[in-house]
Amino acid sequence: MKTIYKSLVAGVTLAAIAGSVAAQVVGKMEDQIRWRQSAYHTMAWSMARIKANVEGTYNKDQVAEAANVIQALANSKMGALYQPGSDKGKGWKETRLKSEFFGSPDLGQIAQTFGAAANEMAKVAAAGDAAAAKEQFGKLGASCKGCHDKFRKED
Image (tube, rainbow, N blue to C red; front, side):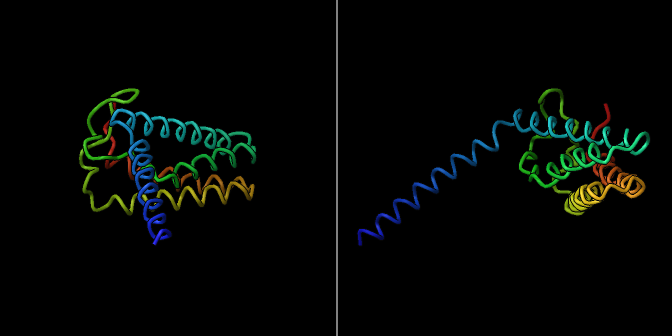
């Protein structure tokens, strides 16, 4: 009986801790927007690094580094930063998220396409073939555009 009681207490304690951590991870709405904006700025910088290499002097290591950053962000479960209502408000600046984002039947496919393109970009970049990297970079850019065109307001 004592073992069951100890297990129950441990389980309840862990659940309380997990709930507390989950609440902290999501954060306030403006934090969610700020974190999201920061991640996309980092992604844009990484895309610019790849673009400079595939259009100029190709450096395999720089392309691989940038592709790995994009892959990590694409697989980071950033969807948690898109809570209802986060289409309004300010992070570092006003959010550009369109309200059509929420409930869109296309969202899952768009996110999946981007994740697959980011994963493939990292794989291709690691191989070091400049022509293949340039081709995959075009596909990655198109997957980004698929979301931007549908869900991002222009400045």
